[in-house]
Length: 456
Image (tube, rainbow, N blue to C red; front, side):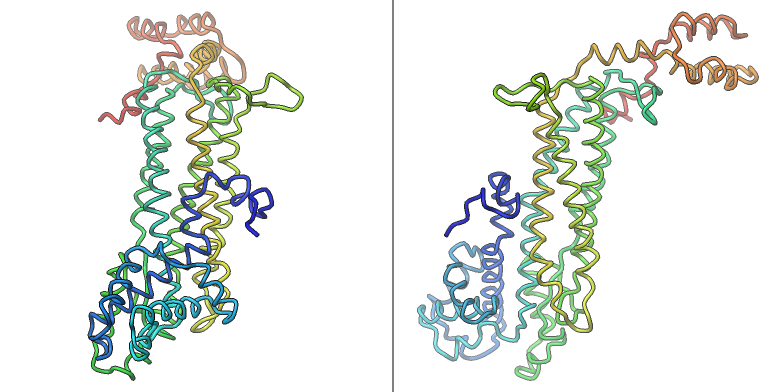
């Protein structure tokens, strides 16, 4: 029976199923089957091109065209038929091979030609390339577009709010003012750097037999340049060839991919928590959505649930990504099977990332600045100008400027009048005194606006 989402064990396939269709198409069991079919078909075409055997020279055009079509787009894969074969063989990759053989036979392939399907392959030759294709597709078609959309949203806020003053909160206490745009620019810049790293992770693959040495290939066809055939084949899939493997590709690139994505997630956890805090302070208002309920008992509530959901899902993703990165590169001797079940959870980790990204974008779309709250907080925090005053005192050679301001301001609110009275007692040139008297928390912003806009 088809699974009703309400009965799903994982919320990714239940509560959140409608948001993750793009990733499900890639990482589901059906997606893995299709990726395997693509690799098997592309490999047989590579053998034909390499003139590996005389029988391949006369493969019917219908069979060649069918192989080429599935190598380019395996959407026509009959997943149900493959699963039916697997029920008999209890081997998923062999089931793919048997299904492909049956289809090629219908296209007119002879028994001798069918023997070239899965030639020289261990299951891991097919699986490592299938997962590499899936991870590549997920990055290019799902994760990077979502991350770039988020980056664009952050950059837009950085520009739009470049000059909007905001009280900083180092250690949760009043601190030197910044601008709203500058804080968005900080996160945008961090995200940009890690996006580059994630996009540049090379995705590797191998096609070299049972323990990575082309043993069977060489004994069967010693005259063929197997290293070049393998390298060219892997590269034709858009992957980077790895010649030095055991039975499995060692998965170091998957660890790198996971670590790069986890760094992005960590930055965005930081952002989600900051936004939660600014909403709590009243710096941002959340638009109420008609019909929504914020609390089962408190009717007034509009909760920052999108930022909370993002934080939670990024955390789940990072827990999985950390395990994937630590476990997958470790394999006993030339092969153990403990990576197989773990690899099937790659899509789960990326699913939580994607869900979190969607939550962040949704949350950003529902918030708007509350200028009156920003101004009121700044007006209550004249003590933040103590930094400015003591620094100007230093430039004028006035001794103990820091200590004098500490005694005057530390741990207590400072009003405008009290600060001005203090400034008038200082042995400052009149121009400097007047400059300090004209300074307000709203205007004590340094180069924040220029930095927010990315100006030099």
